[in-house]
Image 1: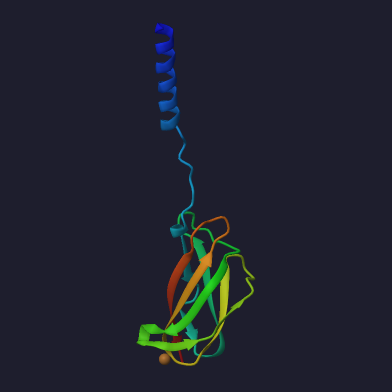
Image 2: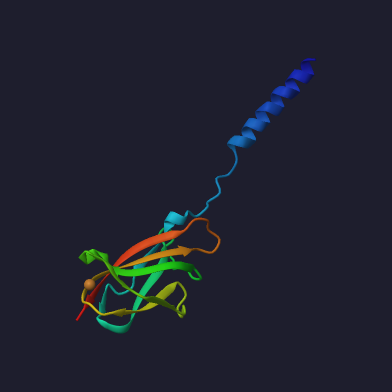
Length: 135
Ligand SMILES: [Cu+2]
């Protein structure tokens, strides 16, 4: 009976130890990722390219092969939310760098809103970037 109690106590202690000792797995968080503009200023005109890169803020590394499922370019920063231009994603030539073609007919600040999935991560990256279009 005494041995039985000791064994139980030991088992309990071991279970407690193993729970406390579970290593914290270093999982990346979707919030660690963000898009940033490569060039903050773009010339006005048809078929202009806006280039952004996706970075992991913790590692500073560029993140390739993200799936961009939502993109919108409008003049919300100038109070013209209704002024929307079509955005066409171009092929990813440089890993982690994403390019979008758009008609930027009006000078001023345009907002590029992006929604993306990162390979191997749950959740979505959502970024709003303000591009200044100059004549
Ligand atoms: Cu406008």
